[in-house]
Image (tube, rainbow, N blue to C red; front, side, top):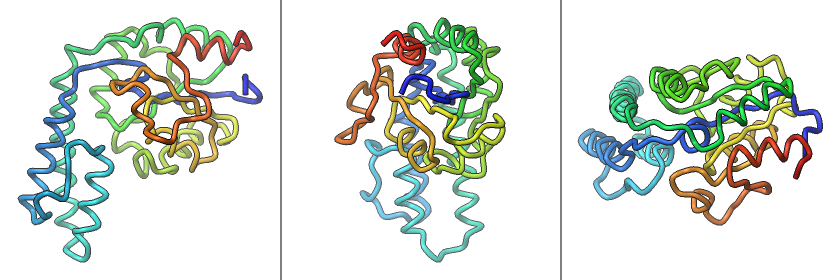
Length: 225
């Protein structure tokens, strides 16, 4: 692929640019407990699923019940997620080589953005703590796109804010949610193994290009690999 018309790169945050000890299992257990208290059948949802999958299942079961009640449930879910992320801020570290890679990409004239399902305060503080905040032209966090990843609407919103066409944008992430988002939006995609699950993040459907980390990405984009 090399550059081939790529003018901007959108990055996932956790597992791609930063690493932190968010208690995802505890967070998902709390979300499931809330959903079950609101009438979702016990045993239907598992903390081993992604938050996206948990909420998709729950919404299907919710069916024709009052929409305003579902919106209130989602508001409480947001609070549970916010708390887990903010609590993890002291544990945030840069994924090895991320800062240097971003510096090289800016020198290459690329526009850079972050698209995360995380809380904005968490995203900003994490990037500030790791010295990467100023590399980004745009940072879009939870609730700041019409729909969240893996909806293509999230990425298309980001590309429009960057002033670019989807085919001019590369999404980089550590999870199949990121890959699904890019494919549906018509953007290119490169996966990295730096997420907490490593290569297991992809299941049976691995991306066409899967790199060890962002250092390899700069080498790939510049034609060194």
